Length: 434
Image (cartoon, rainbow, N blue to C red):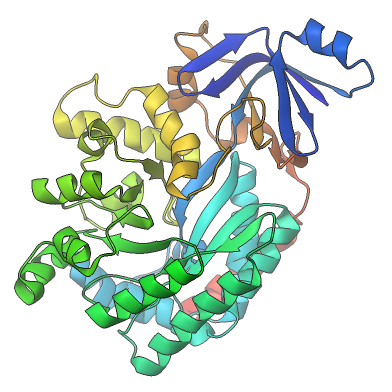
């Protein structure tokens, strides 16, 4: 097919008008003026995208699919800080109550939610001791039916005892092994933090991932608690401890990275550690604002994530755009094209995915068409700002994953959205004890 938009945003810094894209067998084959492509391929289907911009699909580099079940929950013990957020609320009231039915309902709903707001790819981290074993298969089944590209992991941890620790590690390994050759579904290794996992457990998890030629992930300094804990118990910062263990390298995706010392930022850059940034959820838990501008200046690969909090990546981009400016009191910080890059190609790079997140011949056809009926004029120099600041998921018209339409005219094709909504409400009510 040949897609003919008004504007082509090939990447954050590459914008053009009067440019069409040809897709064949799930791959972008040509990017050229529409007349040239129609003349060269007269039998191709023509997709009229007048009034729209064509962008790469978004890559959500960090999501907890089950997180939607807690939206609006009445908190039994309101947290007083990040440590309290985990100990008094998130673990006892959410994660420790989850089962496979709840997580399946949440996955179906959030896949639809992400698709219709332009996200085609995501990395999920599940932590639900009561849902072991096989919960990643439940999630993957729903993602497959929605037609999304998903990387799944279970957040291995020793906080619930050694039996759960072993089963959580095995959940990751079995899933990674089972999906080595799948086109859209794959697995990665994940452990929680240095304060819930012993050095031996972390080393073992990383070693098992290396044997399988996959990468590994952990939350890192989401608040001040982990850094303080690492200095008190290991005599060094969190990232220095990871470097000493030999896991701070190009295979490591460190999420959050909010309360970081200057030396930790240097370690991330020097070791090639990748980062996923969740600007909105960091605010919600009172963690702070991550030093993303400094990480990008050091050449660190950074992707954007929703953390399962607000799953519309347009809203997340706005948060990243505004918060760095406010933190540094500099309106030139983190321009819109850089934010758009983090939401697309940067996110793909953070997840170790090649040829994804850019509109270029030979790259995967993960695309979104976004309505551009702005109330002010647009041109190549302003469209990125317009998209980041004044579009949201309800402006997304069509979404394609690997060359297949998954959203058409705002309708999610692979999910019965009304049924999914009813189901997730029922399961959230059950989680809440209603």
